[in-house]
Amino acid sequence: MSTELNKAVVRAFVETWNTKDFDRFDDLLAEDAMLTVGGSTISCSPAATRAIAEHWIAGFPDYRFELLHLVAEGDLVAALMPFSGTHLGTVLDLPPTGRTVRVSEMVFFQIVDGKIVEAWEDWDEHGMRRQLGEARPGAGSD
Image (cartoon, rainbow, N blue to C red; front, side, top):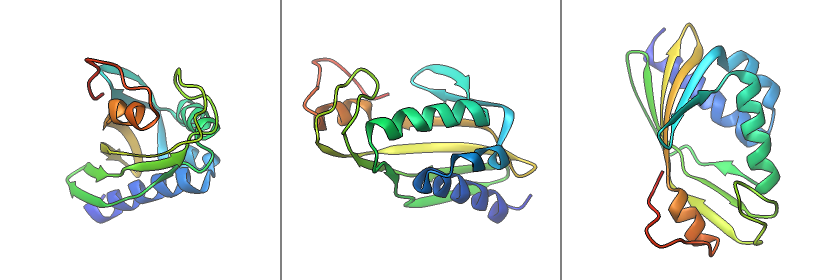
């Protein structure tokens, strides 16, 4: 696939999160897709990604990515895509605070045959916790 088509897959992935149309993950993610984040590698199959999205939407009902930049080379697409939302439900180990956050996030996606097969995510968990009033001494970015 061309780099433009690969970028279109990532745009559709972000749109799926933003519109909460999580059934579209079936068309965008390979069944054996993997995500590396915070030093761990986990499944990001359509079902696993749907569960992740539902967890975050429960914590931030207005959760939204802002897709600032896409850069593609070969089968890789790099995305600068900070997210924002209002913390109205428990997410991770954090009870609701009612605060609004904007959190830096970058993801590299590998696209094969029009589907995401692997992703590497780096997001500022410490910055999010700080915005929510939960900063811990010595905690770093994930």
